[in-house]
Image 1 (cartoon, rainbow, N blue to C red):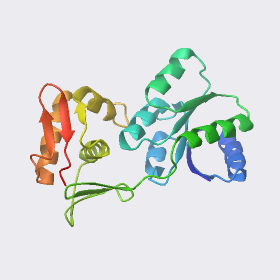
Image 2 (cartoon, one colour; image 1 turned 45 degrees about the vertical axis):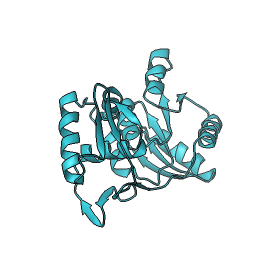
Image 3 (cartoon, rainbow, N blue to C red; image 1 turned 180 degrees about the vertical axis):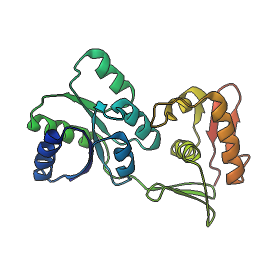
Length: 221
């Protein structure tokens, strides 16, 4: 079955969900805040159950952050059944939502449905020319030499490599680079980050500027 990350601050809900999901064969890792959830997130997580309201922020912030790293399925747990709240979550890339209080049988059904739609495995290693990105280790190599990247540089490179040979508009890139605090990455910051990334990779031609549109990472290997 799947390894799930549950981010929820209500201890009673966590206990009940952990019991039910474990009995159904899933492995559960739980966190009661965004910060702890971020620390526990890894490439082995196959689905995230995410409370909307947490002590240190909203589930929107975490969804925005995690989707900028990897397109892992997200199901929102919320007491807010209003259309606006649901729409915002789905617009951020959430795969489903369930309104509290909910029946555990319904939650299990939703989880099964989402997992059927999404492959449970993906290659942890991405390559482009002589650049290798290992999602499991969160590391990047140029040839056999590991290079140090900032968190923003890593997330940008990951997005480029997941979409290599595709032209990515600047606006679309910026939408994927929200940080965990919900702070928006500016257009100028994107330009500077691309420049630094090119310098560290030793490639001026690998990440091409598409004038008036955005960028494209080209793989000519």
